[in-house]
Length: 426
Image 1: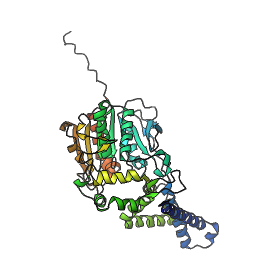
Image 2: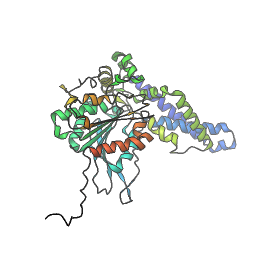
Image 3: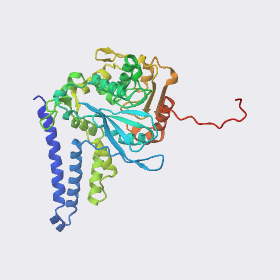
Image 4: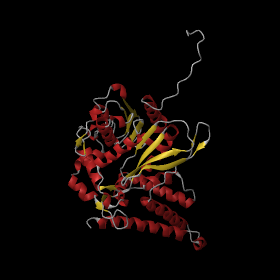
């Protein structure tokens, strides 16, 4: 029962605020209130609407809601999401484009497991779909996974990626965003040594902490400042009775969200006060800029305790990937075994989470890879989110990534038939 009470206390506070918001919204919308034209009633209703939506979103997994894309013929292509591989801790999903006939490069987009759902990459997915046959790792919320499913740490995560790459085959191109970059690099090295025929053709690492000490940030400073005992004592709780994963030790999403919000508390406070004012004036809408951002930002998921703690200890504190000392299932992974997979790193010039220098360290670790198969890019002025979902991604990074994929074994183009030369020898 240790820490189960605190987990349920957080859920109780969230649930109570959601109820208060719903009550205020209902009371403010009551017809009798119209008899008293007092702006306070409109403010109460607006506060209730924003508050109810805010706290309700914290326990809802967002839908993908990928809009249609335009095919080569100019017709809309509907996107459907299909489960390719189902697992206890995550699924491999396929974004199938209806009536697509032309072959596209097969791409595995590895989503981060860092407190948000894979839907955080929604805009990234939509931007890649016209040019890729896209697969995405869809990690599950730990509070919904029964204790009987067992543990899930960085080694299990790595083996999930190995299994996905085995399934997709050697003609696959991998894009890893943020947190999974070091583990994706390890999974590729695992295959390079044991099953070279299953390794992907290219690997693009975006804003990942390959060597967290290469350029210190608040994240890396926190990792070194706090001991593992303190981290386990402060951050780890046991899932309460409300969810299927009751009894599982987790790093709660609500706890991480509170940390996220406190880092920019003034900015978030202003955003919500402005939204309440817009709702009171009738200017707010279901899919306005505020709701589009916070519906995703507030939707958080729990991580298993062993995954969170092993990430901090092995990736950040011990630097096992940076030192090329990472071990999976008793087997030491040698990143130098990667000799044929083209590797590209992408960093943001203003990234304050994985600062420039942390990700490009992967290229130095690939000692067996010729320089011709290495590439890197630093996007000037881009923050962490902007390197995979902002204008920097759309205008500069995505075209560079697609060029890299095509240059390293993308779908082969049909040869162009030249007209016969009548003067050529028979």
